[in-house]
Picture 1 (tube, rainbow, N blue to C red):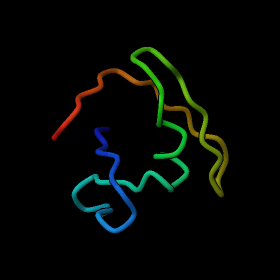
Picture 2: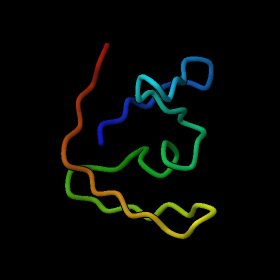
Picture 3: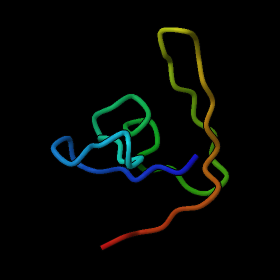
Length: 57
């Protein structure tokens, strides 16, 4: 999966733009390549591994 972390007003799940305030966005902020993060959801914990980071202006 590829996500673009954006502000809450720009979030759009159809374009894989997630809010920095969402559980996944918040968990990924400040992470680096190789980090694994756990995100608690209603159905259990989902793990994400950071494979690449790109800064978009």
